[in-house]
Length: 100
Image 1: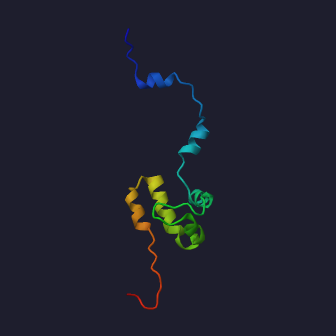
Image 2 (image 1 turned 90 degrees about the vertical axis):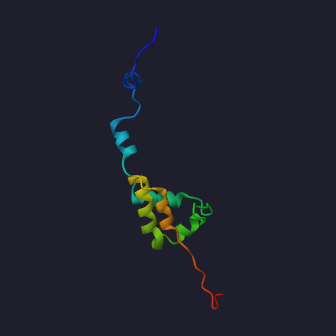
Image 3 (image 1 turned 45 degrees about the vertical axis):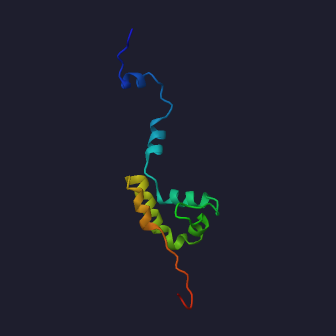
């Protein structure tokens, strides 16, 4: 005997284990505070996708935090393309007296 059940009928038989309040929390947009908390929780020597360690961002967060947070939140909350990350990469140019 073949049953013709829809996915909705199948899902409706599974008891819910997440409350409405839990779902609202889990689906809420990410916040500036959460980005900063995540960065601070990272190991200082953990390399990030751009090759810089988390220590750099932790030490210079007052300088780079706003622009990095804007990019991260646009990717997480607004499904922006990850290519936008390339626009937030920092290039360090060493200061030397006689560049060649």
